Each structure stands twice: as structure tokens, then as C-alpha cells.
Picture (cartoon, rainbow, N blue to C red):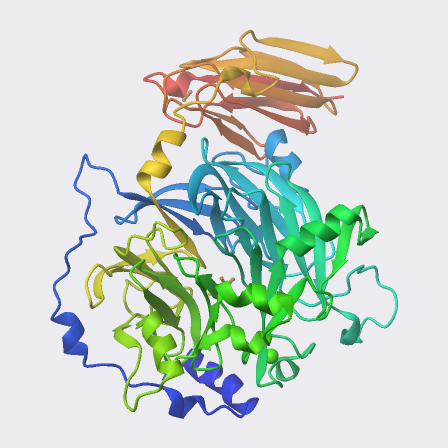
Length: 601
Ligand code: CUK
Ligand code: CUA
Ligand code: CA
């Protein structure tokens, strides 16, 4: 048993009456799984393209990674909340305007926008758990185009776009119960006044449409396929501030938000306004929410591709809870008890965290403690709940993964077009699966063929810490939407003629970059001047980028074809400083440089 496993056990067993150790179903005969032949392959031969795009959250890196799938070749790292000196993210004026001075972030969940329950190829949305922000990435450029601070929240974790009819709203959950107006007043150690927040963001304007407050914390998020509900798991229904307090109750909640009622309250002005944001009370009994009891400290909530079920993982319970979305209307109407929306609670194994789907009625749940993906049949689970049969289980197959799996995701599984071909197991720990690289080892994203009755492991892929989640999107939904170059006029300051302008002690150098020359050969300024360089890459050939590195000033960025980027700095280092192109653009690339001359005062 690993240290990690022991720790999880210690937490789970000391603070709970549930006896997890007895609850595990034994793995099936391992030879059964290995005997099955894979029908899919992960190799993509030279010259051929992948079938899917995979969008990974980058975790502590604060970025989003784009990979070809199933090859898992990383094609692009999209800087979001991080400093990226290659692209100049966090250095250029354009990116600084979106980063609010903070160049660290913790991205956990990245989800594309939708139309009619499948991806529409417009945007990706990604959270920053550390600094409570939401970013929007344009799919046509695969670059961030808008960010938003989410006030009144901490641990902004679960994020999910509306799935139908189109993504008008994006919801975010705040995992850490906190003071709503967190301004250092009152008895801050009294956690009873803290709460959770379900934030609704307008996807188009990237403004907050409203915030629904709850007494409990709100962790993972999902939306339904009809555009009526959003979901949040809550593991801290106790309102605790310590781990033992948060583990005190046997059950916590799946909180359901009714958008019909929320829209009606927003329209009728039935809310208070705080910092310009409509704030609605989502406590039990207000009618905006339903609190469905589920076993102890749930984690993931995932909606089946047919739109019928929300599956909640138990985390410290060996079960998952199946919630029938079609009877939620009766829960909100008050004709049935919230607990009756749970139609099955199959036992799947230890440490269930997240669930994904094959579109054929099967669910695949990740088991952190057991280090397994467990495949189980949803209808079978419901039938067995209604009439239990001795020795019968909805579990179809188990696959050992290496090791400690967090998220798992199947191809297109977050859409109505789930195709049941590939599954990815995002394992937190790789141990000895790769060459040793010191104390911080890579994670292991394992590719699994789920096209048959049994799961077959296809490949291990090392991943730099810590991609929590991934969405796997059919190539035809993305590829045609992505442009080869932007339009020159997309940037208001794009230049086709180079010039230097001086206004008092401000210097603005506007210049083109065309292989292998910058439009200016030298710029002379005085020490202490505020200098702005605006650089337009006027090479229109796709894939021909130029770089701008200013020696000794910590400034560099890449400008792709027809892009314009700018940087502003104080010329506080006198002397001659070479500016050079950083990307090998031409046979005379090394000669593509110019001087910044800073005269000492
Ligand atoms: S959480 Cu990371 S394993 Cu942030 Cu989606 Cu579950
Ligand atoms: Cu331009 Cu190298
Ligand atoms: Ca709890």
C-alpha cells in the first residue's frame, strides 16, 4: 500500500463510520482483460492527422494544453494564467490587460462551448481555482480573448457551460466556503456565516449575470442537456472549517439549480445587489435549489450523454449515486422528496472520483484508492436497486491503472455524441512507469480502448503536473474553425509602416517585422523614458513567426503572421541593447536585429 493510499485510508476511516475496507469489490480476473485484443490503436503514422483534439487543463502551470488524440502528441500550450516567455504572455500589453497582475493560476477544468448538446467550436472555458477567475479561449486562434474575476468566491473550481440550446451561461462553483463580502470585518474565525457561491456568467459578454449563494460548499459542476439545470456537488454540508468537521456527516449533497426559477427571479428583481451583481439566496426552501442527499463527501458529478442521469461519485463512500434528471421537475414542484431522485447507488469500489460514458448505456468511474477504472451499466444498476438479486452487480469490467486516477474521460463523452471509442485515465502518480526524473515525477495519462465489452490499455503517456481534466473533441468539430492566420486589422494598432513618435518622455516605436528585417534599425531614447514597441508581423505566410527579444530587459515575445503585439517599459538601463528575432525565420534570421540606444541622463 502506498503512502498516498494510507493517507487516504486514514482520513476516510478515522473520521467516518463507513468501513471502506470491507466495501471493495475484488478486481475481476486480470487475465480476462489482457486476453482481449485491442481494436483501436494510438499510433498515428507520419503524415497523418489525429482523429480528435484533446484539451487538457494544465493544473499548477496555469495553462491549457492541446494534444492530438489518440497520439497524445502535445501540439500547443495555451498560456492562460501563467507567464510564457515564448509567446510573451504576461509580458505583452495585450496579455497583461487580461492577467490583472497575477501570473500564476491553477486550471482544473476546461470545457468547450455547446449548441444542441454538442460542441459548436466557438470557445473553451477554463477556471483558475487559486485566484478565482474564469478565462475564455477562442477556438479560431486557440488563444485567450477574455478573462473575468469572480468576486465573493474562493476555490473557484467546478465550471461548466450550458449545453442546450446554446451556451449562453457558464456556471462556476466556489469550493471553499468563505465570507461573501470578505473584507476583514466581524468574527472571521466563525465559519457558520461562510457560504458557497454558484456564479452564472454570460458567455458572450463575459459578465456576471448573477450569483446564487448556498450555506454549503459547492465543488464540481455540470449542466443538464435541456438548459434547465446546473449541478454542484457539496462535500462540506457540515459547514466545517477543518477536515474532521467536513467529514462529520454521513451524507452531503448534490445541489441542483433550477434555471427557470433563477431566470424568473432575475427578471422580477427578486434579489439583492452586491458590488453591482444580482445575488440570489439559494438556501433550502427558497425554491431555486434542490438539495439531494448523497453519501459522504461526494466529488465528481457527470451527466450521461442521453441527458437522463447525473452520476455523483462518493469519494469516501464506495458507491456512486444515480440521480434521475427527469424527475427533478417533481422535486422542484414539491411532489416528491429530493432523496427519491436517487434511483441507484451501486457499489463500485474505493475512492470513486469521476465518471465518463460510452454512449451505449455504460458508465466508467475512476477509483482513486483502488487505482482502477470500473465499467458499469447504468440501467442494470437502476434495475438491481429496484429489485436486488443475490450476487448480481452492474459492474461489467475493471481495469487496473497506474496509479491513483483522478479524472477519466471518454471521447466526446460530455456531449450527446459520445462515441464510446477511447478513454483516458488521468493518473496522478506514475511511480516506476517512466525513467526517473527526481522527486517530482510525471503523471501517467493512460489511453484505453473502450470499443469492446472489456477495456484494453493501449498506451502510457507522461504528463507534466497536473492536468486534472480533459475534453476529447472530434476533429471535424474544431479543425475547420481554427484559422491559419488572423486578419491584420484584428489588432487596432497593426502597422504596415514603421515610425517612431515622441511625446514628452514617452516614445512609441511602431514597426513591421518581415523576414529578415525589422522595419526599424535603431531607436534612440533617454534613460527614464517610457518606451512602447508595437510590432506587426507583416509576413502573411502561415507558420512564419518572428520574435522580439530586448537584451537585458526581460522582454521577449513571438508575433505570428499578421499578429500585432506591444510592450511598454521604462528604459532604465542605459547603453546599447540589441533587439533580435527569436524564431528561426529565414536564412538571415541571425541578422534580423536592431538596436535600442538608451542615453544616460
Ligand atoms: S478535481 Cu482534480 S481529480 Cu479539480 Cu476536477 Cu477531481
Ligand atoms: Cu524573424 Cu528570425
Ligand atoms: Ca461532508
